[in-house]
Length: 238
Image (cartoon, rainbow, N blue to C red; front, top):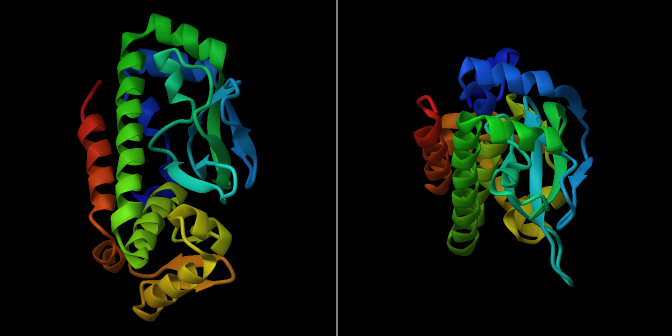
């Protein structure tokens, strides 16, 4: 998921397929724009399409009465929206909102279901990704419970950097607060700390990463755990 090759961004799941299955899936897909703020699915509503992002990123959000939305995960070119379809589950478990504009391949759910029935390789790839997603959700819960806000913010910025494929992106304080499950004031303090250390430049929602290596050192180990889990399952052929 290196952001340095922004001009060559593809999708890890599609790339993990054998050539024949990859071409068959692409033939069923259409390129679409991911527009900032666009809601792609709501909780418990049936998926109409599955999305394989090429650039930009999608936020998975949990909601409960009396509290602000809490972000549980991010989807970029390493994954897809709609992976539970491989389990025969057509309803979305979380709300999905585009938080970083970009592009994606989109496929109608009925076509994806038929493709899954005809391709054991596609089944294996998507089942692996379901495993990655479950691990990310669990690690996020652990991180939010036990780690300091500064380290958690560094982790989310690294995850966003991977998916944005750029050193500059926009994340409002409100969004960052939802990512971390804290008040906006705590976000301001954490962002100011990272900026004082020369790791980022942050103003009015505009974030520029200045020192990725330093940001990795500031992050908790959860970032590396999540990244390694993905690489372990997708480093070889399906």
